[in-house]
Structures are given as C-alpha cells and as structure tokens.
Image 1 (cartoon, rainbow, N blue to C red):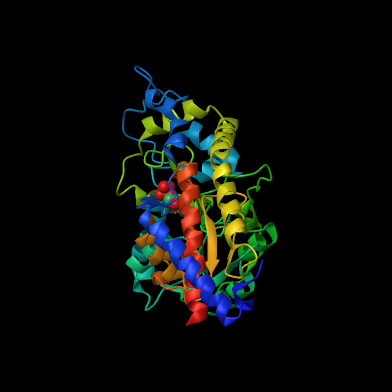
Image 2 (image 1 turned 90 degrees about the horizontal axis):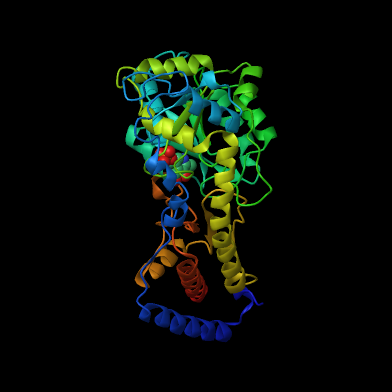
Length: 425
Ligand code: PLP
C-alpha cells in the first residue's frame, strides 16, 4: 500500500478525484448515523432488564433490616458497597454508594473544595487567586467542561500507553502550589483506552506536591469494562497513597452506568477515612440519604462481585465484535496509507483516531455533511482546542454492528479525502 506522501502530484490528483467521487456517493446515500457518545446499546441495556422487577413488591429491607423506603444511610447500602469493595479492592468503610451519576459526585467534590477547601487546604480553593489542574490529553470532554464551568485553569500533559506523562506531572506539581489537582481515568481511559501502570500510579502517589491538598480525581469509570480476556487489574491506589504518606491525595470514582442502566445506575466514591468523612460532612447539607431502593435492587440483581463480572462478560460479547469491526475497517481502508493511527483498546468505550494534522475538523465536517455524526474535533482537549487538529474520538457501542460498519467506512472515506485535500493544498 502506497502512502499518500509517496504519490507524485498527478497520482495524488487522480486519487483526490476518485475519493471526491466516492464521497459524492456517500452523501447520496442520505445516511443518518451517530458515533458521538459512548452510550450502551439497547441490547446491552436489555441485559439488566431483571432490575425493572426488583426488589419486587413487599421487598424493601436491606440485609441488616434497614427499611430502604425511608430516609437515612448517607454512605449507601452496605451490601452493595461490599460488592464494589471487592471489585475495586477498597475497604467497604472507605467506599460510598450514591446516586445515579459519578459525574455529580466529582462536581460535588470540586465544589466542596472550592467553597470549603479540603482538610489540608490553607484556605478554600475559591479564595485562591488561581487554581489549576493537570489534564492528561486526549481526555474526557466532560471533565474539562466541568473545570471550565468552575473557573479552574487547565494544564495539559500527554496521555501515554503507560498512563499520563508522569515526568511532566512531577515537575508541574513539585514547585507550583496553584496546581491543586489532576484528572485521571486509570483504566481503559476515555478516549485512548490506555491503562495506567502500577509504576506510574506509585509515582503519582509518592510524588512531592507543593500544594498540601493536591487532589487526584481517579475516575475509574471503566474498571471492569474489559474487551478481552487480558483484563486490567485494579491498582490499590489508596493503599499506595497511604503507604507513601499521602493518604488523602486520591478521590476514587466508579459507576454502574455502563454496567446496568446508564440513566439509573449507582455511582461510587472512595478515599481515605478522612476523605470519606469530609465528603459525607458536606454532602449531609444537601441529602438525607441516597436512593437505597435502587441500591437494594442492584445488590439483589448482582448478588456478589462475580455477578458483576459475569454481566461484564456478556457486555463484552456484544461490544467486542463492534470494536473488531472498527479495527477491521480502519485497517482495510487506512492501513499503510500514512493518513491515520488509531488505538486498539483492550477495554472501555472508545477508539481514538489520529488523522493527518490539521484535518480533524475537516473530517468531522465532511462526515456531518454525509449524515455521519462524530464527536466534535478537539473535544478531547480543554476548551475543545486540539492544537494539532488531528484527534477524533469514535464511540462504537451504540449503533448496531451493520450501521457501525457503514458509518466507519464513510469515516474512512472522509479521512482519506481530507488527507488528499491537505496534501494538494
Ligand atoms: N467518567 C468517564 C471517564 C466517562 O467516560 C463517563 C461517561 O462517559 C462518566 C464518568 C460518566 O459517569 P456517570 O454516568 O456515572 O456520571
């Protein structure tokens, strides 16, 4: 296969003409396909339909006899926390089960820090002149949007196959007390699919920080979302942090959004005993307790951690062929052309596509005009600004596999056409 770079001007012009014709045919098909958000498909949601009948009429008592219909139990139902405790390797006492969204818990943590400070804060973050966060990129757009909405500045570092660029982070954090924290999706990151290694995690736990309240938002949203049998193991990040003398550094988040129902799951927060007490103290001003009936039906549905793992294997059976289709089409259409590289994730919800520099926006616009919705170019960067305009996040989970194939073939045409245009320019 010849790379576009190796073509002489006449061959390149001929290729461009062929691609433009192919694109015209694509447009004429009047497609209406969507690869934008990492949502579970209806087939995946169906796997948890038994929840709709749980806990069942007359069933409302937790294992310890608590009447789940009533107020109370701010930290969440112990039996459900015990299941996630085993999955995440975190003691139940350090794990809170909350409402349906872990993003809300993340926003609450940041808001409490801004209004009140963390226990080690010299003053509330909101009274600092400037608060800055380290953001591995490409990363999760909603993390960045949250910081922007709260007035927290963002400093980017690269995400790599072993986790975030920890050399850069150590340098940033060591001397600058305005750097108050960082985001990290440690397992099968959104969107790169990279998993942070034990070595990188240990360095993040041990590194000296100028800010005494430096906080790592450890968003383990894809902790059990394996696509292969080569399963990433949860790092005992709270144990590492405690052992390194920074017990309060990490706030861990997890969620059943992409395990049971994305809109009606259970979210989890964990940390040191001190962090959990801090969180619950502030939460108590806004809640008398979570939806324990939802937690009870989840506990009954799963029974134990193995129940969660078994369900995740069924998700894998649905998702793996979709990721395989994306890989197959990208390789077939773009492999060896020198126009794109892409991730081959072992878990999570995304494929990360890097196209020719300066063409990502054009690819997304071309796809849109052909009826294929892609996440806006640059959305995996703070303020939507990808300095190299090359990154596109693909979300293969939602469409049926045939639609996905059609969409990916169209995307490949757009990538090639935009690359040919750029070379001709
Ligand atoms: N964190 C990450 C990294 C995600 O990718 C997502 C959803 O895409 C979420 C959090 C959302 O979690 P929740 O549904 O629990 O708010």
